[in-house]
Amino acid sequence: MTSSGPAVPYTLIVLKIKHTVYGWLLLAFTLNLSANAQKSALDEDHAGFVPVISGGAGYVHNVSGGIVTLEPQINPVLLVPFGRHVLLESRTDFTGFFQRENLTDGPFKGKIFKTVEYAQVEWLANTHITFIAGRYLLPFGIYNERLQPIWIKNLQDAPITATIGTRTSGAGDGFQLRGVATQHPGYTIQYSAYFSARSDINQLQSARVAGGDVSVFLPRLRLETGTSYQRFLQDRQIDSVAAYVSWQPRKAAVDLKGEFDGSYYGRGYWLETAYSFTTLPIPRLLQRTQVVGRVQHFFPAHGGGNSLPHVNNQRVDFGLNYYVRDNLRFISSYGRTFSSQGNANVWNVGFTYRFFFPLWPAKRQP
Amino acid sequence: MMHKLILYLTIIAAMIAPLHAATSRKEEDKRTKAVVGSKPAETTGDDVFQANCSRCHMPPMSISPRTAGTVIMHMRTRARLSREDEIKLLRFMAP
Image (cartoon, rainbow over all chains, first blue to last red; front, side):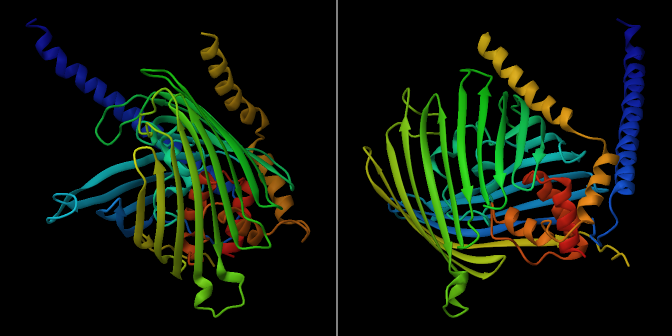
């Protein structure tokens, strides 16, 4: 035992040196890849590749079943490119939940929750493969990955089935491959496949899951349809599936989206449509208005639970949004839930703002 | 057991299929150059912008050329765009 005393620091030093060398080799390899990537890229644009802080911020005044919740939030997104093929990006969510002390009276009390939604490194190898490592959003259905940001979603409340396929935190810790399997003038087939390890680390919680997503996009029709599959590989091992459609017809300012989700704990669907007044022959000031409608229905199975309702649930929502600018809008919506546990009205009023700052100036190429 | 086997085979197939389909970067750049330099009948950056961005959100119009590269890299991953689409978008947003 006595002789092992000095050996420990030595081993640690060797390990430290090894790790440093591996680190530098990895960095050199990455930079080399980026440099090569830049050489091969077409120099036919003058796009700058500077680090950017982007994201959304907003405030939602929510009244659900008579209980008022104040929800200020900000979701900064950090984008750091290394050349044209490697990107480091992350998004952190800071959301406050403040309610009256006795729910209906008393002073407002609450706290701000911080969540690292994703922190990943992407290597955009080519059209067919983008390799992602780190903490990524689970690509299940269309809501979690695409519509969740506050400045994107048309209605602020998530669909009832949004937790299907996204447990336990909406993110996975591991790796993911995604890209375009094949592209033709008439259609594009896109895919993603991932594996996530279980993690209980603070801010990096994730479940051991594996899954994938395939979608077909018809650019002429602006129609996308796809399906997702996930296997939950811890505790009760269950399958989750989703099928979705997204359509923005050329001739009308309509955005139609729908999704079916199913898992061991239940199944349900949501259908949302949004109509912008942009093409209507009305004063320009009113053309910035958008109306939204959504219906959803959830049927629990095996008692429901796991972030899903325990009883049959129906909900309708109507929204009215007004775009002051493309990055600033006022939002409002009314929804009503119908279930055997009681019906309730849900009101949301507030605003959303998308911000965008380059972190340092870039030379514009001549 | 059979269930797990099917799952793993599906994941492996999903990963191998694009690898198999992938061409070398050189070939891809050549093909891209051909597409970019070809006839006006091809889809333009504006078409790509309108068709793809509106799939998820109201397309933001206020992106400066100096940050366009970073944003389009981000969107290429998120929206699973092809390299060809990325190049058209770059030329459209930062000509």
